[in-house]
Length: 336
Image (tube, rainbow, N blue to C red; front, side, top):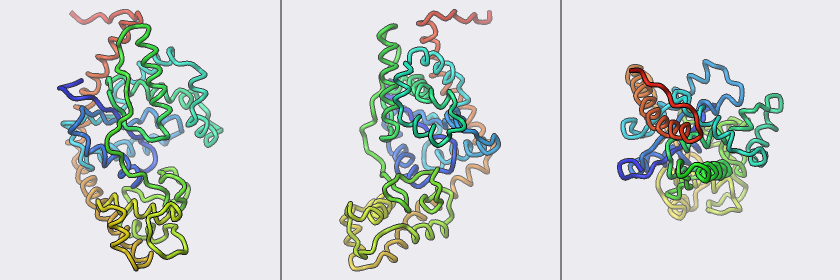
């Protein structure tokens, strides 16, 4: 614990463009819990290169993502917001943890199988050992809790296994993290295929609302969202497209499903889709304006990046030095 609070770690990849689903499902929720924990929020750019990236684009997206963290309401003085690649301890601990991870465990990772199928021409070792780097991300900061979605649950489970295996040999070195069980963010599905989660890698651009979409684009995508032919606004699993739009409207307005159904009783899908678009724009346009304001202040952002890299490095290196000593690496000779 730090300052009497438990520690929380989370991060997002600096690839693609963040969606409304990323915001409502994770980023917005991070802001609400930032007072309860000592929070480390990383831009996980090292994870991003398991798939080939254009260097200039990766740098730009990483900076945009870090700026969006702050624009969304995360105070960089109270939350450690940093680039993963600026803290070399992530890579150093990942190598050590590779030596405490079994091939059979990594072979069982469903996300590796999915990504390998999508990138058959680039099935690299980094893609295979991705969960070990994720374990290093979490264990470096002695995280007590980690908010993860269902698709990342396997990775947290292997993180716990690695930590317990290391601790059984060398004593209580790592905090064994738990799943964050607090308020869960909204699960937002694709506007074009409500059986799939809204994704920044969706091949259909109309399936996702991106955080940087302008209002006209937001309204158009909501208008084109898949519903059904019933024409009756109900909150039902039998109407997944409509249910998804209601979930989006609820998350943006704070209303319950019953309140939404009553509000639009007797009105058509056209009216409702327009209202959803307006509600989304009411959240995203101010976020975009704040992101643009922050991005224009280069000196401020550079200062935050530098200070938080140093802060993250301090805590990460405390853990790394302890691990290095435990496994028998020679101590570093300090300058006189």
